[in-house]
Length: 288
Length: 121
Image 1 (cartoon, chains in turn cyan, red):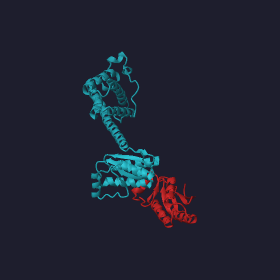
Image 2 (cartoon, rainbow over the protein chains, first blue to last red):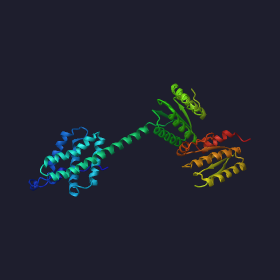
Image 3 (cartoon, each protein chain N blue to C red):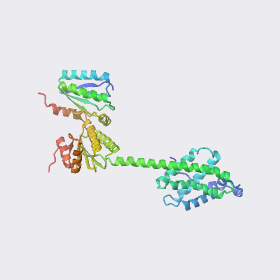
Image 4 (cartoon, chains in turn red, orange):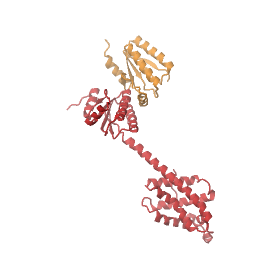
């Protein structure tokens, strides 16, 4: 993603006074020779149509200047062709900025498409030129929309990943004893994340016991029980014993009704009792 | 890397696998382990899988078979040091190796063997 930096100052674009009277009415030369006027008109339009406190006026000013630069280059090089890489980069960066500041898709589109209205108003006698520039701006607007959606999806995916990470804390409780409080429902992807995290921690800390606490799991169905059973079996292959704590009476009844068999696995309601079991196995006891 | 290695440690054997087993490895390994158990009077075997990064169902079955055959000769086998990816793969393949004791690492494996087999009379 391109960073938007640098000083695209509008003053650089001012042309000598001699040509100030020489505009031929074309859109092309409007942009080339009347840049300041176009920019001012565009900013006025944006202030009316795109009122927002989410983006600073200075950023709007900077972005619009850069876009005018790129539009001029596009009209010079190949107005009918595909958007140039530098223009695409700029549009991607603009869309990304807008997404990150909480702007809506239509606001992003308005930002780009509004330039059409400004140029049309200012160059009423050049229908051919207007048509050409409209095609370019249309392509720019559509590209911006795609870039907007892409950036938003990236952010959502990253947040989902982070949520998954946060929801699987594995805490060393004692030397050789890990604690894994499971909060929320246990679907396949979470179960996989939990299993991977737990096994990695078992290897890393060389732990012999893992206490899986399910008091934060609202319901246990057959699938959840299967996930748990797989996790316990994998941990056992690595030489670590899993103890399940936090089983409530209601959950216990459901498991019996469903015929879920987790015999062979130590289970407790109380975390303390589960801990006592692990201590016992390690030859440890708690003294007053 | 390559072929499994067999080492005598106290009154036990340490069998180290370096990679998955294929069908040319399995029979020689079983034969060699059996011979060494008998020759040394070993009462236990630690099967070290800490160097195995990838496993398939063939190797899983070979391990189970090795443990069973060695058990018939009077030596208890403990599987030690399995890696997370290998453990997950075996469980997904439905091979939980029931009845085969496991240990976090080779040291714990030997400690467990000493506990199980007791002092030499």
